[in-house]
Length: 145
Image (cartoon, rainbow, N blue to C red):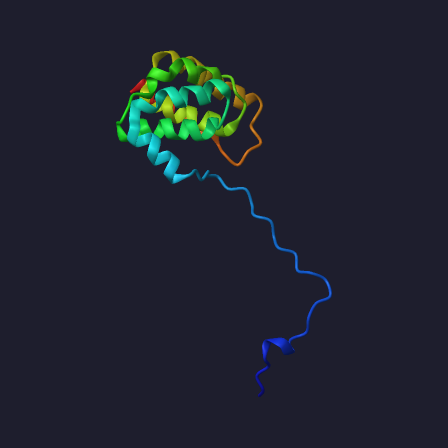
């Protein structure tokens, strides 16, 4: 039995197709950016508010607000006026993170929009790898506790 070196293996005339990366059900954000804003807590609210008003990096901003609320370095309910701009969105990622924030903050005015999002998604299911209905439903249930 002989062992062939790599250069002795036959070469293909057509390049190998690299499979495309399938869509994932999670997002990855810069840990440096996230940690910076989370450590600043409520002092970072003006910058985060501007992002929400301008529609820049909305999903990342919502993630940061969720982490701020989770780490108890600030009260994300103070930004409800800016958050409420996205209550009618059809973007599954925004709905998921927004419902997570509402679940933690328990803003009374957010209950109606959560129910509306759930009904909207039941009538027109989002075509996304995110399942916002799971988070929305969990947020609605947490309001009943």
